[in-house]
Amino acid sequence: MMDVIVKLNSQTAGRDKIARLLQYASKAAWHYMQQKQHSRQSIDRLKSLEYTFSSFRKLLRLGRFLDMLYGAFSSIHYPDVTVRITCTLSKIANALFLLADHILWIGRTGLINVNSEKWGKVANKYWLYSITMNLVRDVYEICGILEREGHRLGVPPGEVLRHTCLAAGINRKTLPLSLRAVTFVQDHKDVVVDTVKNGCDLMIPLTALGYMRLSPGAVGLLGVVSSVAAIISLVDPLARLTPA
Image 1 (cartoon, rainbow, N blue to C red):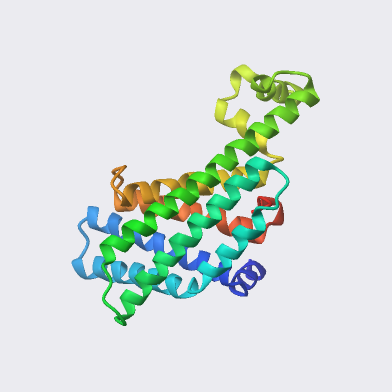
Image 2: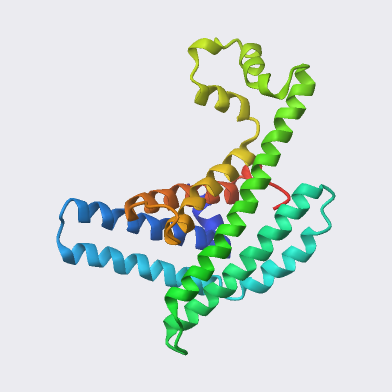
């Protein structure tokens, strides 16, 4: 456990994910305490903690806009067309999200006056675009896995889960669909972790932009799950979807 913490702490991305986990955990905690009518002082303390972690992450990401933009130029050389398009568009959108995030951080420092509401919406829109492209890529990867397994088993892609379970000696009728899916994708941890992360992340900008109505507690829990998934992908190479 200590090795994992040291490994994460030695990376900027690792520190960001730990801070993100604490940020969203604080959000979920203060909403829970608010629902249980705890003292206003305790709730405000957790809200302040959430804001502190958010500001710390913005500082950690300072300059990442250029890194992400450079990464977008590198991804245009991927041989797979779908991966090339989705990765490139995702990185461009993420670069623009980071640019808006940098502007928000400058506003928080008080160096210049920034319309936080306006730039917050801009940041969330580009974050949403980036996540959407990532999810399109995840669906493409899942379809590719089903197709390859279908060819290997000599069955249509839609029958892969059933045949995989039968080959493992599992009674399909008594096994819930969710467990059958887990049985099938256990050898594809990278796609599973990435899909869970992006699926949870998707709800956060959708809520911030008003397309969904989720409580701060629900947003906090989604952020915690996606942060844990991101941490897993950092510490376990087999859980990291490549190219990214």
